[in-house]
Image (spheres, rainbow, N blue to C red):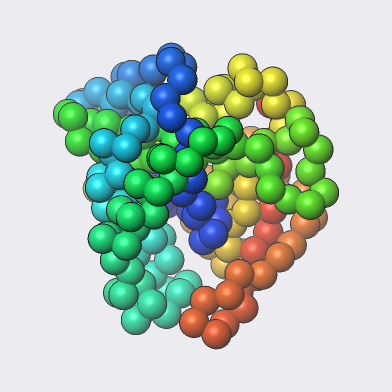
Length: 205
């Protein structure tokens, strides 16, 4: 997988508490290289610090050259950890899946009901998916995305959407290889006074 696959720079962090959903293990890197097994499980408040680290590392890796360097360099793990702790404490339908390798969180994916104005109750959203740079290209991102969308299917959603920066070609190629397609919706995200175009992707579950 060639990118940290930020589904959108919006990156919301409110997530639900654990609900006993199944885990997955055994993700393998592309090319069949030997590597430690990956375990995917639902995140908890104990993962707040690790998720914050992944969040900051993932943004800096994915958006370098797309967002201003000084903006990325100012990202704070402490601030992100606070956001994650608050998110884990909030009740709701959002779920954060984390990927572990040798006991270390190396990625996360947050999903839940779509927040788009034109969405119906059967439409879910991938709010964010990020990896530590060292596991990019090893199959972790694909495993996380597949696990998260399978869970959405089990929860009764019929389709899922996500938003991605229009200029983030690596992420767009990743989603397209996973079967996602642009659905024609566009928007803008504002960073440091600049409006950056985003496009929406969709997949049937």
